[in-house]
Image: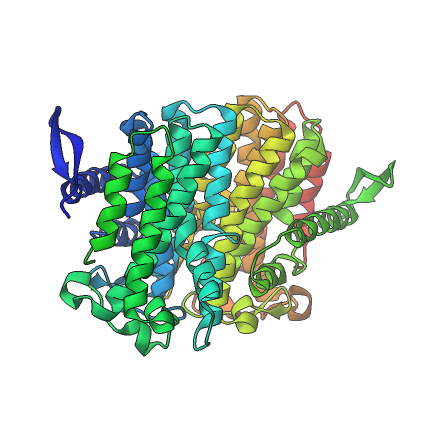
Length: 311
Length: 311
C-alpha cells in the first residue's frame, strides 16, 4: 500500500510516498528542535544533554507531523506551524521519559536506545521531563507570536495544551493505566484509557494545526473525531505489534505487555479481531475527513500508513 | 517587630499585623485552590486526592501572597490576581513533590506531613507533580481571560511562567543543586543556585502581579530586584533555620543540610555572618521598593516578616 502524497523538496513539488513524506517532515522537525535547544544559553549542560538525548531519539514524530499535515490540509503555512509541532513533541517526549522511570513502567529501552534514566540517572530524568513540559509552553508562546495568532485563538491553544496533556487528558490516562495493572478490565475501560493516554495529545496536535490555519468550529470537530480514531488505531496497532512485531524494527522488546500482565486489545478480544477492529477504526477516521471541505490527502495517507506500520 | 498593615476583613478596612495579613491571604488562597480542584470532573479520584494532599498542606503561601500584595501595591484588583496566585502555588507545590522523591532529596516529611510519595507511592507522586505543573498553565489562561489581559501581557505571563519555572530558572537551579552535592562550592555559586532554584519563581510571582496591575517597565524592573532580594533572604533564612530552627515549628527535621553535606550560608561563612548577610539583603530589597511610586506597605512588611520568621 504505497500511498503517494505531494510535497515540496528543494523548492520543487514532488510526489512522495507517505513514508518519504514522514521522513522529510521528521528531518525538518528534528533539525528545528535541535536548533531550538542549541541556542539556549546559561542552562546546565547536563540538563540540555538529557533533554536532547530523548528529544532527538529518532521517533516517528507522528504528533508534530499531524500538526503540519493538518495545517497543510487547510491551506495554512507549514512554517508557522513548526514551533507548535516541536512543542507537542516535547510534551510527548516528557511523558515518555516519566513513563519509563523505575517507579512507573521501569523500561530500559525506548526507540532502540537506553531510556533517559538509564543514561542520566533518575533525578536528572525527572528534571529533563519537567523541563521539556515547561519549555513546551514557552515554545507555544513563541509560535503564537511568530504566527501572529489573535488573543482568543492563542489562549485556546495554551488552555488545550494544559487540558489535553494534563489531569483531564494524558495524565488521567496514565493514572488509569497504572490503576488497571494486574486487573481484568473491560474493552470499554481499555478504550477509555487509550483515549486519554494516547488520543488526547493526538487530538491536541490536530486541533492546534486546525486553529493555526483558522479552521471553523465544524471542521475543528470533524478533525477531532479523525484524531481520536487515529489515536485509537495507533494504540491497537501498538498492542498488536507487541504480539507479532519484530524487536529489531520496534527498538523495544516484544511481549512486554503479556509479561507485565497488561490489558491489551489482543488479550481482550484476540489477535484477529484486533486486526479487524484496527481496520474499522481507521476506515471510520478516514470517513470523518471525507466529510470536510479540506485537502485531506496527507491526513488520509497517514491513517493508511499507521495501519501497516511495523514500528 | 509587629509590623502592621491595612487589609479588608468582612468589607471593613482593619489594621492587621503582617502575620495576620498572611494568614488571611493564605486562607483565601487555600479556599480558592480547594474550590478549583473540587469542580473538576472526570478525573481519576486518586489523582485529585494526591494533588490536593500536597497543595492544601498548610504552606506559608509566600509566592501567591506576593502576587496579591504586588497587585495591591499598584492599586490593582486582588480578585483578578487570585487565579494567577493559585497557579504559581501549584507550580511551587509540583516542584516540592518532585524534589522530595527518593531519587532527588528523598525526604519523608514536608510541612509537618508525610511527603506525597510516602502516602501515594512514587508513580502517583510523579504524576501529581506533572499534573499540577500542567494545570497551572490552564489556570493562568483562566486568570488571563477573567482579568481581560491584552494579548501581549497575556503572552508575557505564560512565557515567563515557562522561563522562570523551567530550564532557564527553577529547574536549572535544581539541576545545579544536585550537581553541587558533596562538593565544596563558592559563595557565588551558592548564590547563583539560590537565585535559580528559589529566586526565579518568587520573581515570577511579583512580576505577574505587576503585569496584572499594569506596571510600567521601570516599576517592573524595580519590583524584580526586590523579589530577587527577598528570594535570597528567604533562602539564607532557610539555611539558618536548618541550624538553629525548632523542628516542631518547622515541620521538618533540622540539621538535614549538614547531614546531607549541603553547601549553605552558615556552612560557608558561619552563622553570625549569615545573619548579617540576611539583614543587609533584606534592607537592600526594601530600598528597591522605596524608589518606586507604589504603596509598598505590605511588600515592606513581608520582607520584615521573612527576616524574623521561625518556619
